[in-house]
Length: 398
Ligand SMILES: [Zn+2]
Image 1 (tube, rainbow, N blue to C red):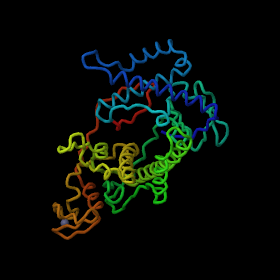
Image 2 (image 1 turned 90 degrees about the vertical axis):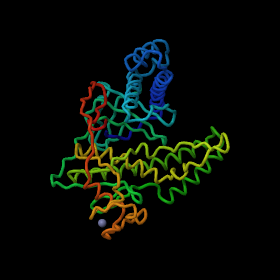
Image 3 (image 1 turned 180 degrees about the vertical axis):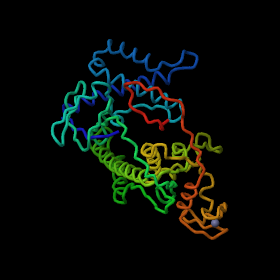
Image 4 (image 1 turned 135 degrees about the vertical axis):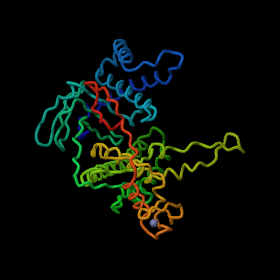
C-alpha cells in the first residue's frame, strides 16, 4: 500500500464526501441485512445477490444513481470480504460505518489508472463523479489496479494505491533473532536491544486531558465542540503517524538484519479486548469493578496496537521468514541454564535465575528464549482464488 496526501478543492471535497456517504450507506445496508438474517431462512445473501439488489436500488433512487456505481459496488465487496474474514476467525464482526469516523471509498479497474503527472511534485487523479484531484507525489506512484481514498477525522485526505512492494531480501547470514513484546518497553530483541514505540509525550497527554475536559463542557452540536473534537483528533493523528513510522522503520530494519525472525504467538486481538462486565451478586443491576480503567492506559494501548502492526508488517517484509513460537514459560525460563521457575522473575523488569544466578532484563531474557524456541507456525496451504478486481492480498495474511 503506498499512500499519498490528496488535496481536493472545497468543491471536490464536497463531492468526495458525498461518495463516502454513498459507500457508507451501502455498507451499513449490507450489514443490516446480514445481521438481521435468521437461520431458518436461506443462507444470507452475499456479494452477487447484493450487487443485484444494488442495481435495483439505483434504478429506484435518483440520489443513489447520481453516485458512482464502482464506489457502491466496492463497498459491497469490502463488506463481503469483512464477512469472510469474520467467518474465517481472523477478524471481528463487521461494524457500522459512522459519519466523520469512517470516510472513504475504493475505486477499481480501468478507472483506477487515470493518473496524470503534472510535474515533479504534483499529479492528478481522475476520480469518478469528482474530477481531477491533485495529490502530492512523495514517492514513485505504483502501477496499481485499485486505490482507496480516505478522509481522516482531522480533515486530511489520502489516496492509497493497492500495490504490494517486493519483500525485503534476507541478508543470508543465518542469523536468528527473537522478539518479545515487552512489559516495560514495546519490544525487546534477543540481541539485548530494547525498542520503544513513541506514544504521547507528557505535554501532549496534558493537552489531551485539558481538551477532553473542555469537550464535556461544550454544548452538543456547537461549533466550539466541533473545534475541540478536531483538536483531539489532531493529537491522536500525530501519535498514530509517529507509531506507524516507528513500525515501518523497525520492521524494515529487522527484515534487513536477520534471516529468521521469531516472535511470540500471542493472540493480540484477544489480549487488548475490553474486559467483560462482571455483575455484582449482592446488588442486582450493578457491576463489580472489572479493572477496565487499569486496562485502558492510553500509551499502553498504543504500544499494544503497535505490536500487532509490527508483526503484520514483519510478515509482509520478511516473507516466510517470520516464525511464531509458543510463548509458554519464556518469561520464567533462564536463557543460559534453562532452569524454569516463577521465582526467577525478580520483578516485572528484572530476571535473575535462582539456579545459576544469571541476571538480565526480563524482556531480553524472554527474547533469547524465543529466539531459541520451537516454531509452531502454521501457514494456510489452500490457494486463494483471486478476482481481477480484488485488491492484492498477501499469501501470509490469512
Ligand atoms: Zn540459569
